[in-house]
Length: 404
Ligand SMILES: Cc1cc2nc3c(=O)[nH]c(=O)nc-3n(C[C@H](O)[C@H](O)[C@H](O)COP(=O)(O)O)c2cc1C
Image (cartoon, rainbow, N blue to C red; front, side):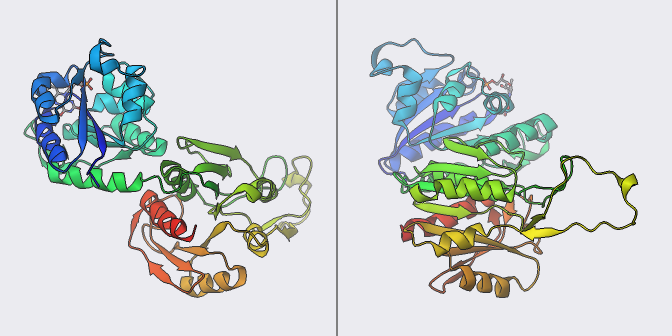
């Protein structure tokens, strides 16, 4: 993947910076063009001269550089440089830069570029184990992943401090493999396509205070939205009530109930080339929600009868309509998963049905990983291994792209 690619390397001030000249050399050998940007601290660990010599390009150090000569060709430096690159790799990423990126700071060349960068960013943190394990660092890493950055877990082993633990920068060949995988994910094969995605649960009002909901976190649908946007699609994400950040370059529409989700989808379906129904839409809703909060004291019986009526079947309705859109449905099952998924595929015939077996460890609601089986209308069944929801998203989109 590296051949003819433009790689931007941001180096920050960690001891592992000494490994990066080798990575620059390997990228150049593989046919990539590489430009290096460094923080001032990074320049204490590895010299700009070494990196300029190996990359064959000027190296920018510190805060916004003095904008003269070649650096300033054709526009504001950070926007121009960000637009040039296919991928931004930040390695080693200090605890400091993780904190800055998680909160949108841009007070040095590396963080400014990251904020201006709209394509894939791969971050390889390296630090002492205690810094890595600190709750603040872990929260920043979670936030960065939600925002759509790929953060590589550091290796375990002996650290520069003499401690043993997580915090080592992965070896150069592993970083190159990760760059390759990230470039693969950022290929723009969905450019010009409109993708409509639903995600999260729905809440069905019992009265103004109480609702019937479900355990969906929305993470799978948000991962698909993020991946599709990175692959160049114009993405609209219809989200039930979830506590997740909107991925970059994604238009988000918030809804609450199954009825609202139905209307939001129907309003936008005609323009979509791809429709991914990953939301866990309630099957039933209270038939007549109370206008005011009802009181326990007013109940004569110890049990409550709550009449429910069926909600509209969004996926069923979409597939009944004759449209050119590729339609992806989801099935979450807790027993005889494949049997039920095949039944759903036959009844609703989406192009693809993604089966989630929530009884498996590492699958289902609120996890960061998933174990799915993808059934296609043509009868093909692909059982995928356990992987992150973001990687599952790409597996789904690879199949969607072939159907478009
Ligand atoms: C010898 C030495 C080694 C360091 N190694 C690391 C490291 O591996 N990871 C890290 O996050 N910070 C490390 N630090 C601390 C950072 O250099 C410091 O937080 C600095 O402000 C980071 O600046 P930057 O993020 O702008 O590059 C080290 C400091 C020293 C003095």
